[in-house]
Length: 261
Image 1 (cartoon, rainbow, N blue to C red):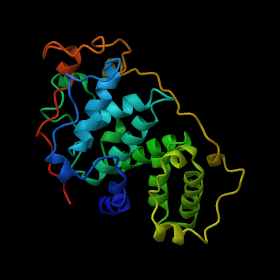
Image 2: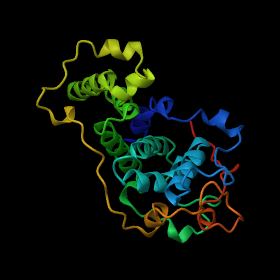
Image 3: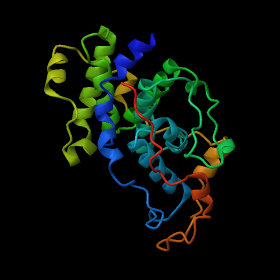
C-alpha cells in the first residue's frame, strides 16, 4: 500500500474516535487528575486514564504502548483494545516516520519500548490497528464493529470486504450493549450502500463472539502498567509528586503535537 492510499483508507476513522476533536480538546483542561484517582488506584487504572487523556490531546502515538498493554489483558479490557486500534489508525494517518518516545510523555524513556515491528512502518501500524479492532469487535465491542463497517463498506472496497462490512453491520445492529445505550454510529448512506450486499455464510466464524484473548505481559513496561497493587489506597489522593506511577507518566499538558492534514 502507498502511504497516501493508507491515509485515505483511514480518513473516515477519525470521527469514530471516542475522543472530541483535537482542536476542541486542546482548549480543555486535561482529564487526568492525580488528586481524584480512580477507585482502586491501580497502575492499570491510572495508565488507562493517562493514555486516554493524552490521546484526546492528539498524541495517539504516545498513548499506544499503554493501550496495547492493557488491551492484551483480556476480558474486561475491551475499551482499551478498541482505543488501541483507533489510536493506531490515527497515528498511521499522521505518520511522519517510525514511532518513538517524544519528550514530555515518559520521564523514564528507557522503560518504554517502541521497537515492535508495528511501530516501524505506516502500513504495519495500520494493520496493527485493524487487528486490534477485529479483536474487540469479535469480543462484542460495538464501537469497534462500527469502525470496521466504515472501513470496509465504502464503494472502493472489494466485494469480499463489503461483505465483511455487512457482517459487522449485522452484528452491530444486534449488539445488546449498543441497544442498551441506543447508539448508532453507522450513517444512513453507508447502510443504503450495503443493503444489496449479501452477508457471509452462517458458518463464517466471524459471526461467533470470541472473548478478548489474553497475552501475558513480557515487556517490563507492560508489567509495570498492569500491576494490580493499588498505588494509593482509595479514596486518599497521592501525597506528593514522587508517586511511582506519576514518575513514569507525567501529567498531560500542552505537549500535544500538531496534526498533519
